[in-house]
Image (cartoon, rainbow, N blue to C red; front, side, top):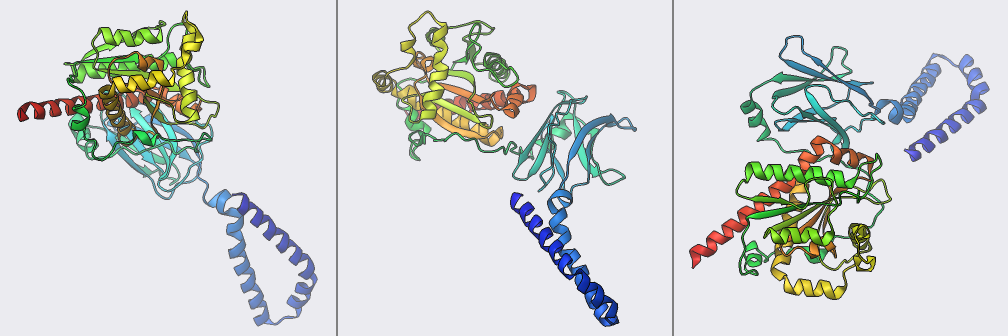
Length: 458
């Protein structure tokens, strides 16, 4: 954009200078010229106008579409609602899809729409609204109220400037049939953060490392109890977001959603929380709670924070020696809970010897942790549409004391205003919690499948 602006300025200077030098000559020539010569001059003037006009208008006028506000009104026929996108000019192309029964994803196809600091207020039947840029153009996600079902279609209003989305009441089966055939659009193409990202390649599974091979590294493997650990709590708020969001609150809210999904859809699994309210629990006690409950999988829920406001994305961590400075910083931040405990802070960092002994003594748990972490990372990226920062490892105290497969999940960055809003919203938390639930479900199914194959082969 800066280059285009400089080019336009250069063109203006040249055109002005040329006009000043040739003005008198043109006047004389024009008065004395015959009809044919005047036509030639007119031709070149028109050609110049055609050439110069786009230089001045292309970015500033021709391609600039801005969204001023979003409004909702009941339809006059009583069959639903109309969502109106108030625009300064109509976009060339737009579309809407419905990948979930209560989710509409509208896209300005191939167009980046300006919306500045617009934060739409949800109005029935809309529960929440999110606006984000993606490779396909600016997108708007509308989360609808639960238990209400609508079919959506788009069109321009009578003035052919505003875009309308008509919502027509329908049955749950009609909407579900459409949602089952529609893929979720990945949103959130934000600027890349300025932190050097290194994914631990050592955690990338070997193609020959099938689940059966990992499964056989443990003498016994069952999956009856899942331990969910909401990070921080009580006198330890965790990280603080740009809007004052406390990490401990987000962790507890998402943890309870995960537990609710498991209780509803996998009732055979017992859910154990390390805390189910706003109270402080020591790091080593969290692992012991899981051990006393004879847990088979430990998931610690957290939210990330760094100085950069541009960093965003999910991370999944397993216990091990950190390989990057970034991993070391995350480990220090999460282990710093020790300062709230009645302990020596020098115990905050696990030694290399401790981690090596742990890895040797718990190879089966480590292998299962890596496998579940990969399942979870895949759910975040492929199903939930979140940007993945990879599966990594570091010496987390909370994982060290859990004698079972264990992962620590960073849901996103509350230091990023856009992501903070997402992970504190009802919509965002349901997306993240359901992704974790689906990873648990897939992990359980694979264990049962492998156990059944092992039993039949005996």
